[in-house]
Image 1 (cartoon, chains in turn blue, orange):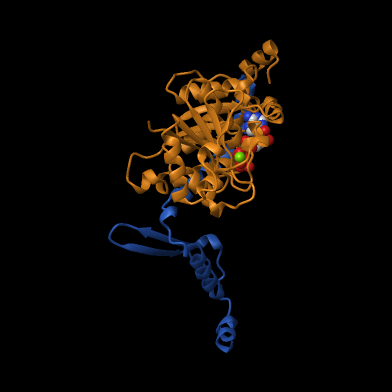
Image 2 (image 1 turned 60 degrees about the vertical axis):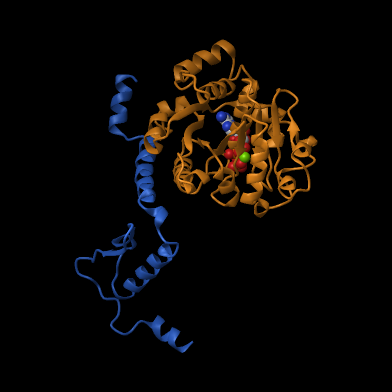
Length: 103
Length: 271
Ligand SMILES: Nc1ncnc2c1ncn2[C@@H]1O[C@H](COP(=O)(O)OP(=O)(O)OP(=O)(O)O)[C@@H](O)[C@H]1O
Ligand SMILES: [Mg+2]
């Protein structure tokens, strides 16, 4: 690598570097006990997010549902980072609930 | 005699499993091992084309599993390489026809006759791929220097460690080998492609070989020739080195840096 190449690569991260960093993150995430996760967890995660966002405006990545399966007990951990001043979406009971009770 | 069972797998499709199975299987036979390559890609068989035996297929793996044919009726003897046989996949059935018990029976019977059994896995992580890897002693994980391929390889590694017979029986785990294919040293140098070191660092699997991106691969498959028999091509030679490494030799990695590739191309016109 020439000196010029070296400085160039310092200044501007290459697409290969971006690829590597993204891979390291996603692979670490998918390895993290993902294999022992119950099948229903992704769906449950989605439902929980849906329920919360009926009341509070919240981003998807602020809700963290984690399942820990050790030999003697399983822990379902729900971690929600609330926005600084939670905006309440509505004070009346959610529409969805009335719909389901009628049908 | 107990044959060694080697699965060639990747998760992601189209990364070079069949090309590698054909090349490496042929390489084993060239080095004197009695070898059979089994196509597990039921419904989408391709190994027969790469091995140039598509017009000689009468019976297939599923016929043998269903006892509609014997193994000796279904095995196709390679015309170019001594000691090499192909067991084709069915083109008309689906992957549900692959049963673990059926495959076990076929492998047991082959195991008495062959030194090494190469299983060309279909893409994905469904039944076909799971069955292809279930009985493996060793696995060659084919990976392209590209984000989705590396991620899928990582998934496959997890499955190899948890869903194979060796894992189920708590035996020594399946031995893993990383095979990087379609590698382009020039693009890596420009920072456009993940490097060997990047991939090794993420997957943490010993490197079996690096097969450069090479026009001779398509040319060979057009002709129905496993590319390892094209001994002028860089891909053919890189597969040869990989086979030697698999069999325990220490071989330096060639063709992984741009200047040597360029010199080689100039001298021999190989691509
Ligand atoms: N080193 C290489 N250089 C250039 N082309 C290659 C190389 N290796 C494989 N290819 C090409 O990539 C394509 C896919 O290869 P191949 O059929 O071996 O992949 P596969 O993993 O078996 O695919 P599938 O998942 O569909 O079974 C083919 O066209 C092949 O010629
Ligand atoms: Mg294939």
